[in-house]
Image (cartoon, rainbow, N blue to C red; front, side, top):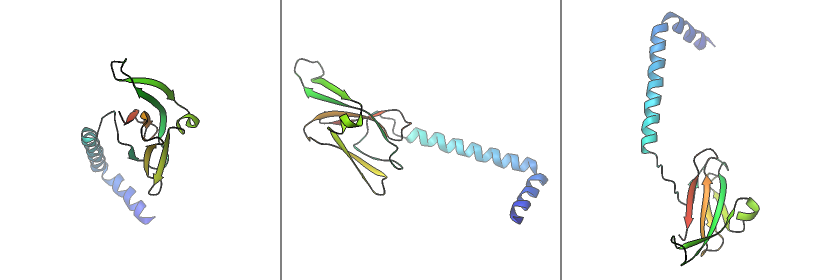
Length: 132
């Protein structure tokens, strides 16, 4: 408690220095945040193994395809599965390492799937392709 009182006395005694130090720390935080965002992977595609704190990920949809010669892309869209009871028939999610590491595995290894996922529930949706 005495340390806190000394800190407040110091702030009252040197308010200009305190404001300068606080401003410098905010500036330094913004520089680090900007540098981090420059080196961050901004791809729309991710790998089937990802890390989150707990089960904060959100699967938006699982698209199922089949090979088709009639389409320009080479694939025919069979359907979109948006509910857990639907996409649990196509994929399973293994969580390990204190529920921090998650791996999405298709139940049928030969299915052509695209999983649309938000890893923390707030980020822009990312895609995971299987056999495509």
